[in-house]
Length: 395
Image (cartoon, rainbow, N blue to C red):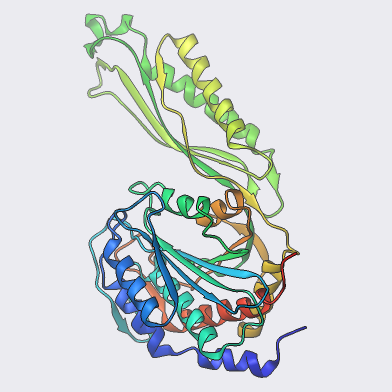
């Protein structure tokens, strides 16, 4: 049965602008570069305890900054909706919080302390009104998200420890689609090496195995692979790919170098496994090593695996209904252009995950900006999603 319109209006009206902004400002004002989020985690935990939520701290493999876990239960059967966010920010000069002309500025405002504050506000509203028909809410916040300083292991530890709901919302800055599919991502840093020392070309350099020629052959094979991958497509997520973004070798024009380095990405679709991708890549490296008489080192490092959730999943339909109530618009189903912790919740935790946050700008820069009205919108969408999602008993 659809929620009463009076309840929906009450939830939307109960979102407090000043309270939400104050929460966001307090989080942004605590510097928390990846691997150093302990102070902001402590503050969030105190804030949630003071608000009356059941709060615990879970090391999840990173005791330097235990994750924050907050719960709210109705005591009645139903689903648990999880809100998950990272508290760490990229390693750039710290910018304190500032609110001007209806916008929040500062480190992490866009990515993703503003969105996390909106999730906290959604929990407060649902607690204050006591309107959830059943089930409950779970909020998790953690460190170690941003690469290359973090490896995503703390959220993996939370998932492995059972700190998951029946579905999860993640307030990353994606708001123009409902992402039901996403490509997997692995990074590679590969080195082509030869024995010996760098040497002038006329003093024996031309007689050595050429790491540059071997690197050129490696690049050729990787390009051929990418051309083959162009045939593997998904109607929403596009194609699989292999991309080389960096190549470097040599110190001077007439010296035979001993190493060539290249780096890039490999992205794949649901139905392809990371094991498949890894074996394919490693075979190319082996071929170069054998044919060019060089050593080829390095391989693919998994960031997140590919995922897909059904358009008919209760989390998707609940979210779509909530978004329509707040905005009078239906989001198109689409693909997530980046990877985030949502991939991990689907693949590792076995629960549906939707990435949706404020329409913010400046992520991974020193000029992060998010409109306060967008934070209010996200809080309302999250609260109404919980209203629709949580009240169904699990079999």
